[in-house]
Image (cartoon, one colour):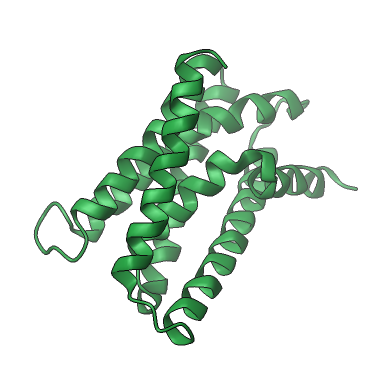
Length: 194
């Protein structure tokens, strides 16, 4: 397999791996507040997340920022908790704090934090002086993996709303609440060094 394919596969596997459930949980929590007809906004917010962690990967590969696994293990569940709270508090509200642009900014900033977890794997795989092709391929793999997860999530939402006739508010509350609960457990375990 060529280098591009190798980095692409590593990016894909990093996001769809069930052991990377914290990233999967963040993506699902991030999407929970969006309705089916907002699919374009979902794609943009997932891309904003990718851009954020791409920035971190670049900085890490250039040794601008160090990796601190304990800090990363604490910050990632914290981002999920904040996203879940924002989903519930701002659901259906109009105004500057519920604006979609703010959600994109949150995804971008939290992407920087999540990128720290990707960075250690990426640096380990980096065996060339140029980071452009490996970074591009790794990020494309992550983006395709995230879009795959979003597709599965959106299909589940479609089944829930079209066949079960469930309300989106309840969907948002369930997904955000589950995201918050699981992330809180991860956060507390990280604080306790488990």
